[in-house]
Image (cartoon, rainbow, N blue to C red; front, top):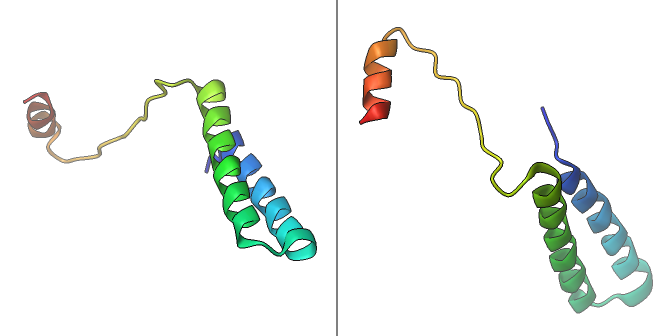
Length: 74
């Protein structure tokens, strides 16, 4: 499965934030701010890398392709 660059960066950032909170600050506020900033940065990275209008593709496997196509077009 494909894991986006933003999600990978988010996972690493959260690990750093958690370690920093446990070792240095011991503040829940730091954890919350760090998580919010990390999430926002991961969203921005994904939007820049993959585009704002990145679409999704779905394959439909059916024994009744004409009926499925007709229902989708409606």
